Length: 71
Image 1 (cartoon, rainbow, N blue to C red):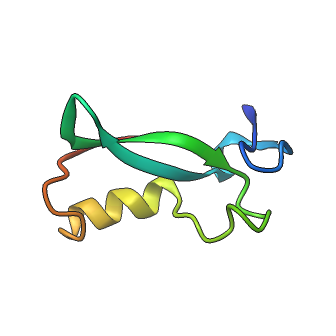
Image 2 (cartoon, rainbow, N blue to C red; image 1 turned 90 degrees about the horizontal axis):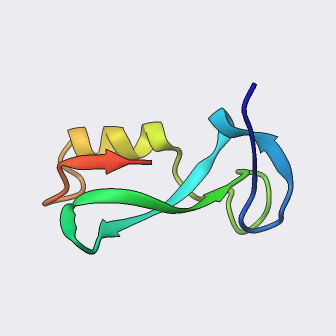
């Protein structure tokens, strides 16, 4: 199992459980890229979306202009 560290509380947790702060890539605003990963349990990250949620939002047209997701 791949582990990672929360960018907010510095807890180590399984990478597949991550939540993300995603922003448009400056060189290509049609792509969202993760700039921070959260554990989903600390106060600063529990309201963040998972990568799967972001992919669903793009597929449903909830993020206009976004075509690609790199999270």
